Image (tube, rainbow, N blue to C red; front, side, top):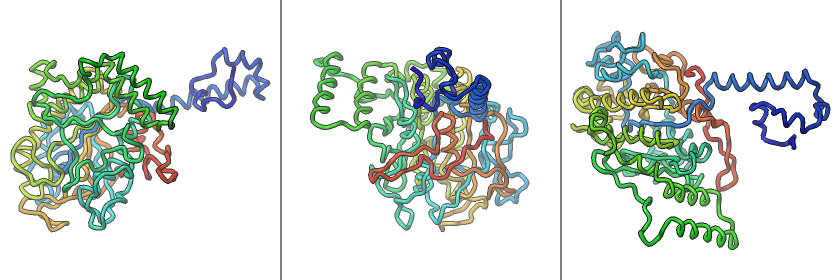
Amino acid sequence: MFSLTGNSGRLCDGWSRREVLTVGGLSLLGLGLPEFLGQEAAAKSGGQAKARTGFGAADSVILVFLQGSPSHIDLWDPKPEAPEDIRGEFRPIATTAPGLYLGEVLPLLAQQARHYRVVRSIGVDPKGLRNHGAAIYMLMTGHDPRNFSPTGLAVPPSREDLPSMGSVVAKYRPAQTGRFNNVAVCGPVKEGREVGVGQGAGLLGGAYDPYTMYEDATGPLSPQGFALPAEIPLDRLQSRVDLKGVIDRQLAPRSDALDAYYETALSLIQSQRAVRAFQLEQEAESTRDRYGRTQFGQSCLLARRLIEAGTRFVQVTWPARSDDEPAPGPDGSWDTHRNNFPMLREHRCPVFDQSLSALIEDMAQRGLLDKTLLVAIGEFGRSPKIGAPTTDNVGPGGRDHWPECYSFLIAGGGVQPGGSYGESDRHGAWPKLDAVHPYDLIATLYHALGIDPESEYHDTLNRPRRLVQDGRVVSGLF
């Protein structure tokens, strides 16, 4: 029977012949045939318009989070015409995308540039909070850091926090049964002494928290909780879960979040496909070598395997803490308040360049970029002028925090590849053209997944909360 109060999205799918016949005539709806055909055509054109703007173009997301924040001028947005104390030591190099130049420390990514775009005009007024924690919270949740101390220090994560991107995706675009919704790998987000800033589901409930795998992926990984004791076969576990559900419904209604938690846990045990994604030893040695035998490199490979296994959202977080002192080696910090150029040239960029370029190339060759949105970003950029302190914490050859303007890489999921979007000014200090706010990036990510960024939910005091505070979709990327 045709329902006048049915799903509002039904019209976009087109009215079926059976529905029209079941009504018994269009006159019951007060529509003549011309009006009916006109509405059907409008619905179809609306669906085509959504497709053109990227709505629902992506099935999954990989967020490569470079906590500590690399210098945008030295990696993504070279300024060869700027004074020496701004342009720095690195020269620009051409890429496979016409007109796009990167810093010389990214030669492998330059070869993959035809697959991605660089956005050079993202920035935010930090409202007095120029530190990592505040910027991380804004980037990860799409909201101002209301729970930070007056000095900008992060506080421990809690259930009163606003949900992270991955948690929102887990709730509003859940993965298929037997697949992971939200997985975080490589390293935890750390700011000061706090771990997990902007990472949990907060108000949405623990069922939407990420599954975390922070073991060093250069060795065997041991995901926990997906193997049954020998004395408990799967059918007995299913019986216990069913019995618990009956008892809970008799005593008190269970929350939707708790139901989702049990259903997801059981489905992952029943279907081992998602769990097998952690078995990196199944990959060819040449593939593992291409990604790089580092914690970050093997975690990027793990991200690809998780996407292949149907995971909806994967976050790969650079393993060093956001505000660690930069140190030699493959896993050191991007927070280059001093010695920016040797650290980038000799330690950070060789690892990053190899691993991210391998991920992009591999995803493209396997056809995974068509439906996977890939974003690589830090929480802010670095100061244009070398050695100029904005927080009294810059040494020789260093660049300070700079949230006002920076860059990020975006690929796949309907994004038009090649070249750049937006433009910074001649010193890379402020957006000059097509400014993008971090909230706009989050709104665009939700939009690509088919989630309306203006959707609302209610907090513990029944107050309406938007998924994104004020973000707009950057339609020019699609």
